[in-house]
Length: 264
Image (tube, rainbow, N blue to C red; front, side):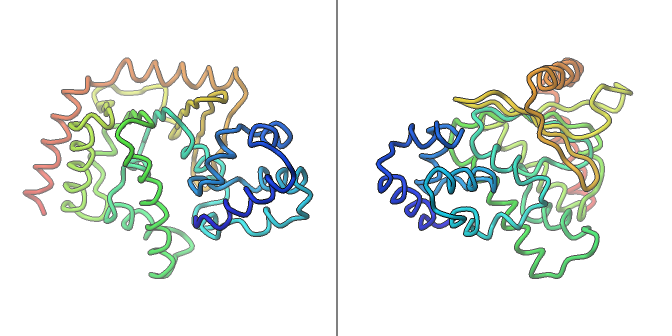
């Protein structure tokens, strides 16, 4: 988002004589989240913006003029996307597709082009840009820590073309070789595993409780109840224990990418 929104929020906060911590306390947010919004690094959710409007007595200005980029993701994913930007650790499980923050442009375009109802080329371009923007959190060399647990189906299902798959798998391998992400594969030979029902994202934060996000066909839900988050973390850990180690997982991805390269 442009920094105009963040600048205006800071002006309103300072005009009200509030520190970032005081505004955060009154709006039931964290000080770091307020700081990120003011610096232009984060976009508040609609609910956060409404609370800020109430505290600052700004009518509905902050909630009405949220940056337009919010509309470029499904409504059910918006909250998870905003949390993703604040997380210090993200653990992904993918059942069918490469997780969004790890997708290449061509892979993302192939996935998004299968939307129903179909989207036009211009809209597909906008969705691809938004997805690639999510991956910018990986430009920081350390935060967030990212683990990706992939069902072997993610490697074997051809998305786009063999060439697209080769490029995509080697992109993940390079991220792993650089130490930026850790990747583990749940092999077909394992059979049934506890994460087969849907994809799952686990997020930890510096100054707020952990959350989980689960997604199915045209639906998704953020879980923040401690008992549910603990349960989902336990299920993830159980599946991770059955995964191939990092070295073997990367070897399988390299071999699969090489095979796609020969087919492409």
